[in-house]
Image (cartoon, rainbow, N blue to C red; front, side):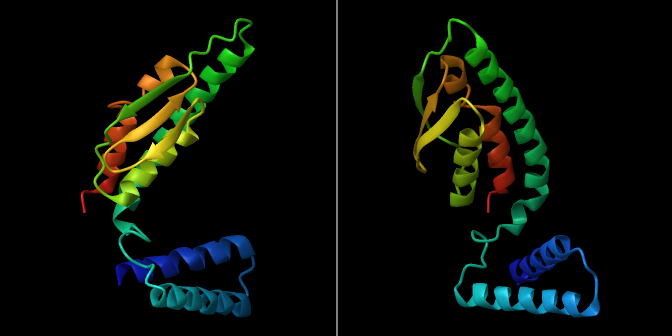
Length: 158
């Protein structure tokens, strides 16, 4: 039930944010629209711990600024590599075992690696990640990394 209520709240706040108008008609239309979407989502059985992971919100809100900082640092590193006359790349592939136990955690980790410039997750499974890095350092930096431990902390071990 908490997933349904929080989904309604998020949808309604999103409606208000995009609308920008606070007339009675538009606000009630937003309530109706959000209720219909929640109703459809519940009928499709997509409002659950995995489909709408409310339990991760407190830790994910702290994870996002850290991820943005890492993305900016990686952007800077990739920019320096591209602008260097010798183009010092050392493409490297690494395999490692992630510490996440849930599908949501695995997806968050794999997508975080791919969002970080210079690395891309080629394969992601519960037993192994296969990652390509533009340099040896960026590829090896994904193994037993701070990102892995932070995403595991986000999981909440449900």
